[in-house]
Length: 493
Ligand code: UN1
Image 1 (cartoon, rainbow, N blue to C red):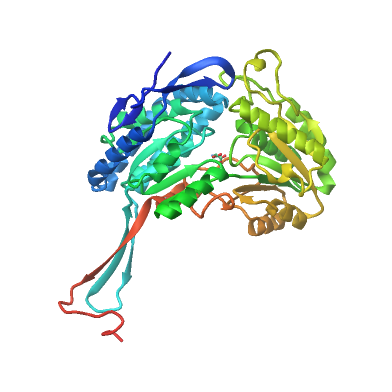
Image 2: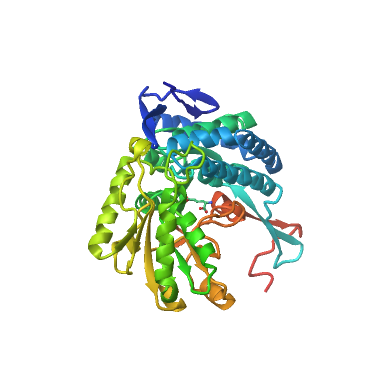
């Protein structure tokens, strides 16, 4: 069986403990992918020390030169796209057309980050005083700890790692325990691209290893994607230790359908939003809010279409929906089906594990839809992270927007309508970091700000130029060429 290693200071090394954990494929639990390091405090210390040492010279490499390496990495991601897609599908389940899209998002991010290295613009402003110049520019911060989830094993870490490196920071990356192989390939690619030793480090593990990174005194910034529960703990620790923390947490994203919408498009959109990635996206459509004038019609078409989705091993072409990540996730989805029934939801399709034929070998759950879910029910409010959609009736556009906002999270949102006034009203009134008009809640592009309001985040935005706000600080410089002491606020007034 293949034994994987950590990547620390440009070397592939065993964990100090020599202990490993096995990772299996969620589509076939007999398929053991390999053994991965169970890293501990000493491994974390070694990786942080390497990153701290490398920072001294990396921060002074001209940014466009850092960009050259970033472009090489993009080329290698492109070359390995199909192979990496298969690796990711095998370990986390979503079909290869999706995992290849995941890699594409990293390619886009790498080229974008490379271009930003020639455009890390600062500001100049006139001074209050004569013969004086004021300017300000971005500077890197130090060592960045990156902790991510299994569902986008390449794209989501790339949103953090690549801008952080482009800006001149060094990085320690802990991939999800459920998608460690993709993390290894990430390191292989940056190694081949020629990033100097210590600039990028990957340590694999599970349990409290993430908190060792967060608590380490030499880690200055934390970029986290995962559950709200863990994210809030990281924020607490970050507050205590005065670290910069960027959090990307839960979502309970809604799509609204108005009666004037292109109905086929709206149904196609919700199926992709709700069941793409088996519903395991922070941007997944987990709530559908339908205007009363088209409510029953939408429900009947939706159930028929959801029943036709082809479940199966994502490595086999033609399959549309893969397994969920593990047994605990299956049990959680079963629990929410039970809760939805008890609360008075109307099951219109799915509702149980899929066990026909080869599906019995993996963690498959039927695409599930509950209608008649009202805003006080748990399924309306709680993130499940699986293929389960609730449908709620709205009386009007205003009611639909209010229902959409009745949520502790605020990541993504969508409205299907052909009425331009309704669309702009929704853009103005929906409380979410992202609003789509006539497309589903999923599908963010690498060069635009990504993140959410309310319980989804803590004010940062990944993606695009805004990612650089996370991974840089501002240096302000005053240059006085008057050859005399000019006392600000005193001599000039
Ligand atoms: C996530 O689910 O953590 O917009 C990220 C999307 C993808 C990214 C999802 N491009 O759905």
